[in-house]
Amino acid sequence: MPDTTQLSDQSIPERAVKKAEAFKEPPPPKRVMSIHAHPDDQEFTVAGTLAKWARAGSAIVTVCITSGDAGSNEKTDPDMAKHKLALIREEEQRNACRVLGVQHVEFLHYPDGVLQPTLELRRDLTRVIRKYKPAVVVCGDPTVRFYGNSYMNHPDHRAAADVALDAVFPSAGTRFIFPELIAEGFEPHEVKKIFIHGSEKGETYIDISTVLDIKIAALKEHKSQLGDWDPSKMIREWAKDEGKERGLEAAEAFRVMILKEDEEEKQE
Ligand SMILES: [Zn+2]
Image: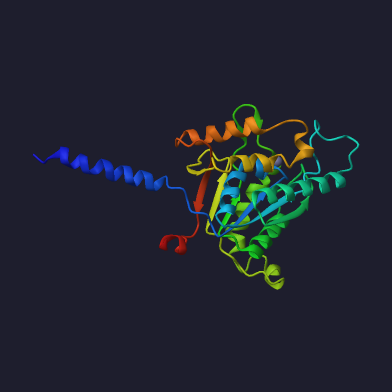
């Protein structure tokens, strides 16, 4: 009879190592693009990861498709002009990005609340992807319609995520899609990975315990939307909840799509 005791003794640590490898936090990408529908979406969802990556040297650009000019019934004065609100919210988004360490913010100026997954939007996102050439794109999950039984995902969030994914693949990397962009000087660019937040299949965890305060500080820059409400408690609870699965004090979870192996990352 083979000595099974010895076999299992060896395979357990090996399996543990493999498991630990699978759970290893991905290294900070060199260039990142974070795409969202509204000012503040980024701060509620992925700001911890961006703050951590920015501090590790990643170059990050935020793309905000609308300027949040629909505001909210609770926090927005009904006499507020939409164009004025857009300016206020763009400024708040810039301030939040400054807190996070994000270098650039691009606004595409689509109207808030009625976003559609159009080819026009796909072309606009393809243009910014080709302009900044990110290795990683961060966006939402267009397939999630319901979160629990009290929050229906905003249609703008679904449209933004849907078009972000379509712009990454196949538009950004394919020369003959949107040839007008080539005429504008934007050569094809292949994104390597997509980090999708808010996904039910999130299996990649970023430990944000050292940057949780920065995430909260960035969110607080959206003063026109928060009013007197302090979001700290809720954000801390969310981060704790996300991290629980991996024994992390605070985390953000992502479904990661690997479209192209990163040669530099493999050599490290
Ligand atoms: Zn939103």
